[in-house]
Image (cartoon, rainbow, N blue to C red; front, side, top):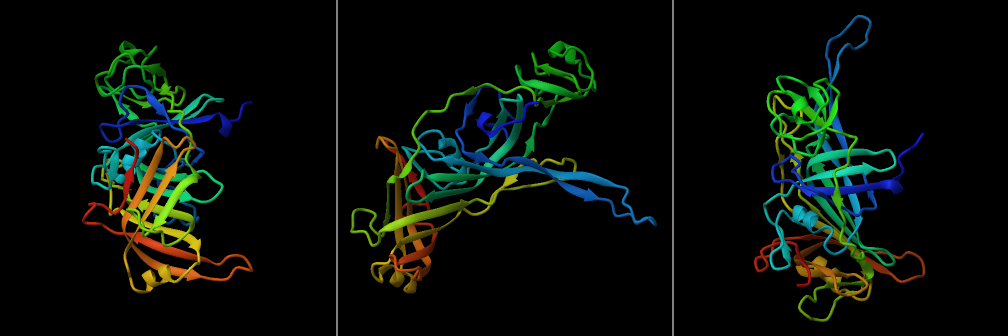
Length: 355
């Protein structure tokens, strides 16, 4: 008996033009280190009281997809996911926070047991980036989405896609590739279908995925973090680690008549972070005490130096500046910060890549 191994797993994605609907075409491979994408269903329990104390009714209610995709950040492979996180598109190699969501279908394939799970209507609800010595630049995309291996109505089947019949209705599945019209029959669609029948995306077939870019991951050795010296002024601190999170607060909008949400709503683009630096002087403490706004710029590169991203927080407010003594070694200062809208840049976070 074969058991699915993480080492034989792959993720791939395709951008949706219609929320929750996987378009035709090849997916693109998505390099990753871990993921926790899963479908969850709310439990709806019956309220009847029985003299024997035992419940009679329990059903499944609203359903949604959620989970993290953790990656070693690199050039090109995650540009679409960065756009989803920022709700915007790259413009002349610059990406700023916007208001246009991007949605994906993501395929989780277990090659050793030939099972493919298809998640639809996914968007990046949170994006966390972590820099520290002696490690790759780790990015966590917190995903929220609509459904898994969804049921599709006749008339919307994708040619070449594998489905399993759920309800026959008035659809003749044999004219679009099925061997019969029985519930449970798996077939590869040769047409979009017609009538009132439905079929679910099959678990047994992986949609072809194009190769990833092959670019090398970014690491902290090649990066640079500056506080208060964007534009070339002298840095005010030597930073040893930095973590920040962009939170969009995507959530499904559930309605009567459908257990899967017809859309996702989003909230503010909140950017918060923490950093640690060597305690050299009172400059950072004074910025905290005096509520002096500053800027932070983070550049990460691959070993060739040809590929990079620069994360710029043009207007930052420091909300804590903690200094302690942790033994006889160097004393450190730990800061927490929030990134605010800057009128000059028109954003609270900007990502730049080389031309």
